[in-house]
Length: 205
Image 1 (cartoon, rainbow, N blue to C red):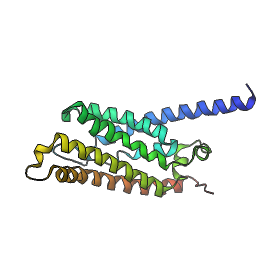
Image 2: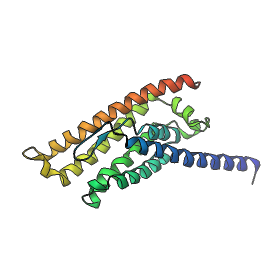
Image 3: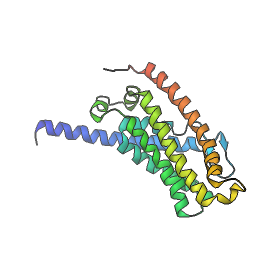
Image 4: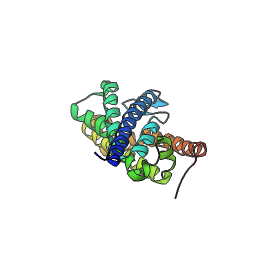
């Protein structure tokens, strides 16, 4: 093995270790924040103090592959903590597994891998990325999550709609808390981006 190959292997292993360790930290932080609810709906769903923010930073720092991996682990933790809302396994898949795994979509806002690897500090990767792309893909991930929740509501909670059309009821119910949660997240995301940009020297082409 050539010296260059050994160097590339060491760099790859270092990146993998950094991804795993950082991923564990951000998932734990997001899970803790998700239990600090600002507002909770009567039949599931809540507004949190930007619980998803650590995962946003992670996904943008390490890309969609690691972003989806962290989102899957986070979704499993949400399944465990949300067992009181269990109806059927399929409902759990829609509301929790698929719903939270969509957070991995935010990873598509990350810089190309070659550009990311120029920075060993994940925070520097985040602040050197595009805040506009991050916002766009964060919104997309929430829209897809909303769709999963709407579908679950129509299939499993239609009886609560009363005389209202189940689709409209589910769209409004799930849209209300998800829109509020997204609003809090985007506010924190934008504020923290500029604070961190000031703390770390931003290097752009």
